[in-house]
Structures are given as C-alpha cells and as structure tokens.
Length: 83
Image (tube, rainbow, N blue to C red):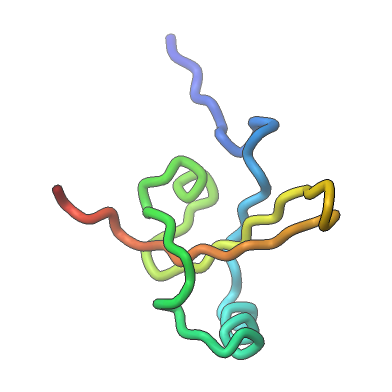
C-alpha cells in the first residue's frame, strides 16, 4: 500500500497560494507588467498540482528570508511544452 506525500508539507517547500483575479490585477498594475512578463511554473509541477492551480492561474510563493524577513514571488501557470 503506497502513501501519498503532500509536497507542501515538506520543510523546504515555501507556501504556495492561488491568487484571486483582483489580486492579479493589483499585482500587474503595481509592477506595470503583463502576465507574460511573470516567471512561469508548469501546470504539472507537484506544488502547482497540490494547490489545484490550472493553466492561466497566478501563484504567490511566500518564503522566509534571513535578510528580508518574508519574500514573495509570483509565477504564471503554463502548460509544459511537448518534447
């Protein structure tokens, strides 16, 4: 019998959260960017799958930082290209 492991519970994986439409609009406005200018994360990434994100979503990743206290980054969910 196999046990599923939730990648988000691992100590080395930072907090991942789906952003709402309103949060995305504010993010794009604050940095004067478009979705295509955000770094990308594949829809089949284990952390993306664990939070139920789908293609087109934006994920907020919150890390603890010794220098900044808390650091946020953002990723645009895209489909992995075929080889």
